[in-house]
Figure 1 (cartoon, rainbow, N blue to C red):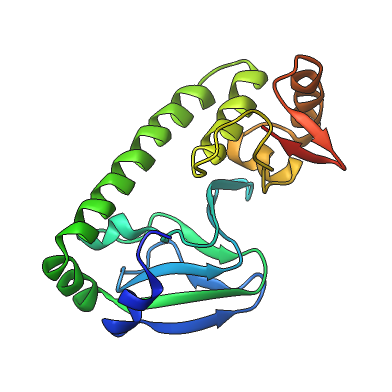
Figure 2: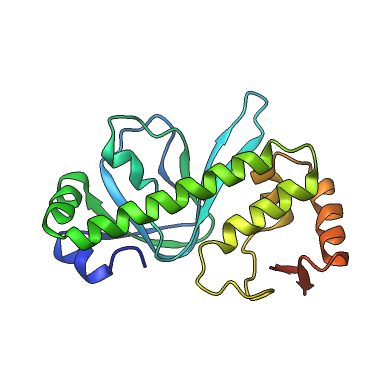
Length: 198
């Protein structure tokens, strides 16, 4: 949990419930709220000129949604769309700034979180520039495992379908399927009931 729900509510956060496939905000919208996932999953995506979906992140319980845009005057470069029914806490930008001003530890936690995400985004960018599908896929899997405290081998179930991994890595789904099987043979991942563990 990035910021405790109690603190967010104390500063005026409201609970919103979204259906599966609902848009929280769209590319080009002006950031007005801090969003934090209480339940469910949200994807940050765009579509290229051919209409192919590119997924930048999949956010789960406790994570914030594009909070970095609250610190600069820029419109959203992505869409935020729910994967399933989601509960989200929504705090106005003005209240978010007040909360940070009055809580130095929360401000430091946000800075640490942003720094970690930026670090892993650099890693993802480097991996996605590789011509080797295994490097791209492993990079995406490692990125998602980086959100969890338990880093022991095969302790984390990747919350992505093969199609979603393809959208994250700009690979074809067939290539992802072959690559995941290869990574399993090499002992990099474990597959249990079609779920990928790293």
